[in-house]
Length: 236
Ligand code: APR
Image (tube, rainbow, N blue to C red; front, side):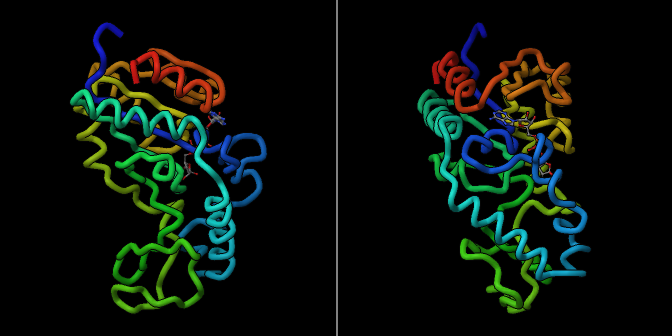
């Protein structure tokens, strides 16, 4: 890269949290290979059997709380500070519903698929902290309705912050995807959007993703190794 990028758009997926012990979705033994998302991760499943759905999410939530950020999360947090120090910006958009980016020190994280440690009220749509889980019939702190559902990872939910994400992508000088299979839209379409805008793209993944042929460049290996190396080559 001739000049240092001023604004870097980073898209992360489950692969960045794999080495922290959190399962991915589509790898061998992934979450959706063991559980059917349509019976556990949709509004319809929640309406039909809220206890089973809440048990599933509370189990995942306990896994997130027990996990620790890895070197890839830490490198992104350092890069955010490094870019800001030189007047730039690292826009971190994650498909993940864990809080490992925040716990690694990233100050600005956009969760386009929501957050597992929060709850969303299906009556008033308010989002509230729920690190301790969502007891059945827990009242919404905003409207009092007993209508709380997990705040993230919901199949069929509309991804969030899309306008903000599109605007940040349009203003970026580099697009980097980390640990995502490129299987789920709209996130899977961002590399094409970047290319159409003439923005250089790079994939950092354990193995070539569904979108591999679209990227200008790629590094393959475990995120905890390739992400810090890649960012340090950018002076971050
Ligand atoms: N380092 C880097 N990449 C890894 C690692 C690792 N240690 N382990 C796995 N990967 C890669 C896999 O090769 C795969 O390409 O991470 C990717 C994970 O892909 P998915 O399991 O499909 O996860 P993701 O892309 O985040 O899924 C997107 O699908 O089910 C929905 O809402 C869910 O946000 C999720 C979305």
